Length: 168
Image 1 (cartoon, rainbow, N blue to C red):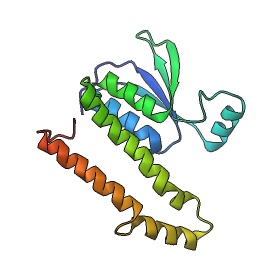
Image 2: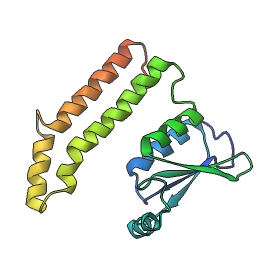
Image 3: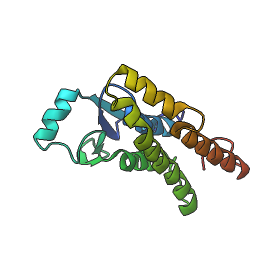
Image 4: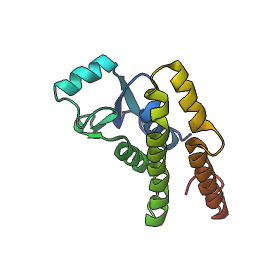
């Protein structure tokens, strides 16, 4: 983790009080020593804010971006857009277009994995259905294994390019 560059927060993360889609934002900021704030919201607050048109798109995470004097510049939404923004601030999002595309490829593949696997966990009829669906997703040859094997191949390719620290 990098030493914190400034004491004043660069942005505020609006999200629920758990890791989820906001955790990559927090980790990227921590890696780059970027100060930020967390604003935790409840599901009820999210529903109210969305109904009142207070969400930039559909829901969190959202970033409230501050200028150097601590004044709000804008809000940014959509988790991967937020991640690229924070990654750029933190110096962990590549400048090289090929390296940047390889990083984006991983982020986009995580979205594919979520889209394929998460419905099994959240759209089950009951606990028995959930158990059956989860076993199917997690088994050898299942969708989770497929994606994890692909991620392992990307890590191995990265190592062959001489990168042993996880960065592209």
